[in-house]
Length: 232
Image (cartoon, rainbow, N blue to C red; front, top):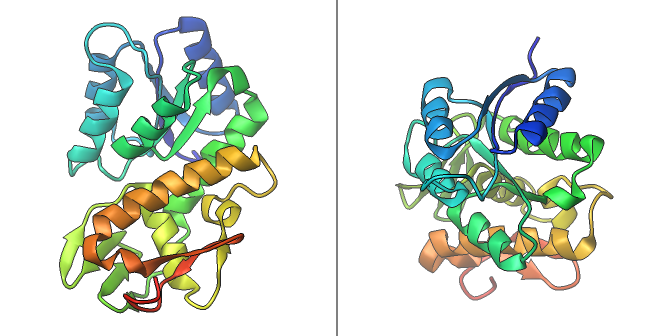
């Protein structure tokens, strides 16, 4: 039984084939594309559970463009996006998270087992939710539909943003560490984990607008559900 369907969009043939082999051996159903146009076509045709995306693709459609297209199309907005790139600058990471990426891995840090853990964690976050609606002030979450409403208005969140918000509302009395919010356990550099979660939190607060107080910072620990406009 397949553990999920993953599309790899990567122009380096050897790397793409290696990633496909690693994923296939681990039990995932896979497909590959070598450029952005073909990759976006396959996203729309296959509606995979996850897209593993290189940033510096040939031709005019780059990784950023594909990520934005995935998020803007209602039929694919639920698809998880894991960026795998050779770019070293932190500014690229922030740009991709802003565009809706769920995870970001540098190619120089690629290790098959750690890579598979990241893939599994992102996909697990997308499925480990209950069915009962959760109410927190003006916020209502329908986990089964992966839908978020504020004062009855539907808001759009990436899979990782949704999962972070779901975890906070599911444990309203508890401060949750950044590692818990990202399902990272003991893996990865602390600074990188903190930066990744903080970028997602910033995006969540921006989408919540005047209700950004719903996500409250607990200094030295992580985040918790805010208790009111004057306490967030």
